[in-house]
Length: 437
Image (cartoon, rainbow, N blue to C red; front, top):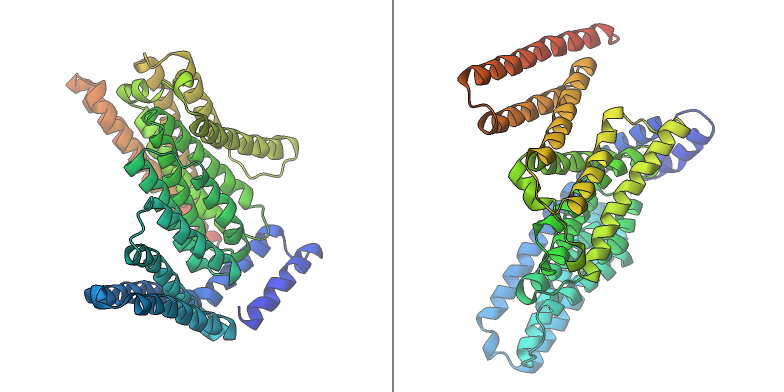
């Protein structure tokens, strides 16, 4: 971290304490200059990291070409020597100065790649017949230790990927539910993403957690209903987490990432629930058939989602602190509605279950369009329009058999989008006129 950025990072809390800037303004300042400060460093780390992984794979393949002809002693010497050399050089450069930090991190990542290759090569040298997913677990443990020892975001990214691969290998090859996988991702890596304020690592953690969770629930052979319910809760938790992190001084720039991912996953899940066949298949959780480990993780995701929204509700209505639009409350209500349908009806549903989700989808869609037009923001305006078109096309084939009804719906939706365009243009014009010259 460069000296000017370190100085600014130290001063911002004092500015907030003295009332010079608000918490949100401090977050905006931090995000603005963090991006400028880290652009070159992260560019070096990213491309050097990719290059380091490719070089590591190339060296492994080069040795593999004549590996059978190398004596065991020299095989071990090559493995241990390459591992020690790359890590020694990487750590030296990493600690030397900010200028070489990205390069050192990339070389250290190459060393961890050698560590993973060494696990397989040692097993081959001594004919060790072991449970092969354990290699990914050991490899991820090495990357995790390096991530915290340096600390290194790239090592943490590799660790998150390897944990997901480990859970996938256990689930696909052996039908084993590794309930420790999602816990390793969250407890082992999430604090590092927070302290390093890394959106790249946070994104990788979210995706790795999702894959690990699917593997844990899928290995239980319970079906898609349990997985769908858990992922819907995770989507709601991400949106709530984004709203909570906007008030956080340390890592406020994580809020847009959490909210964007949450809304994407939530709208996909909600759109699926607008189809009667999907509700009949997905809303039928059988409590007596859920294994203990899967039940714990499913309950944890649902419970954390509802707890986060309860905290937001308390902040908004009791303390007036949370900047939470009223339409966002449809998210926890949707999660609760899926639970009610899942445990009450046994999956014998048609439109009586799909209709409420269609109404929720339509309400959120119209709200996005209205907010975009009111504030002159393109992203929610376009998002709302696309979602409305998707809902219209899906219901076009389900409900509207009369050509007159179909034509009327097209005219109505087209007129709504046309009017939205006029309102959006006016909002942009007002914003331009109000902006200081």
